[in-house]
Image 1: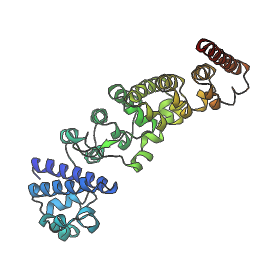
Image 2: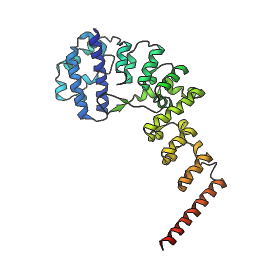
Image 3: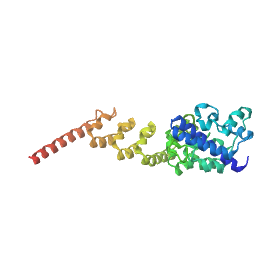
Length: 305
């Protein structure tokens, strides 16, 4: 297969993946536009029987299962050719070179699967561009993880177990990530081991701060490990005190943090941890607050009269 045809084939794979996700989320207007783009790519590719052997590496039901069709796509000559000849082809392993994968890795981390035996340096480079690549790496060491975290703060959310959503198409606002890859990945299964490393843990917390600065409400979706970090909780609560409800037990039992939260709103006593519920110091703060508010109201009424 000539070099230009490889790139067209990779673009086709990306469009097919995008189409599946749009279909899954019932975004049918965008889905049919995506089908049009697939048909344009098929025109450019001019697929032959040998090319079909490579297409068998991906989920090609979009060309066969009628639930995915509209009238135009159903009667497309290339789709008809694929449907007629696909079963007669023997699957051939499909690999792309590193530079081509690198060019499109930000569109969809899934194409990392088509890179044969990547070096550690290549994995790092791709994971820096798209941290979701870490879900597909079979073995990760501390050095590699530290290097990726230093270059892309979103990798901290991957390590935490929160899904950093991929854009399924460069021109689309639709997102997805493979749930199976997330749950069964090396990084997910070895999270506890990684976070025992002090350097990784400190960088993980600092990177999460930057990640949450984009949208602090993402704190809600983080793991109990992250939500029990005192440093991270102080940062988050300084931006949005209402997120106290989502903090971990360690935070709700932290006297300094809860003192500050109760001074902001006495109703935060509702979130006191078991260790603090009977602490006299906490209730003295509340008593003083109530007296202060009562005094303010009294002064206001006198001034008013």
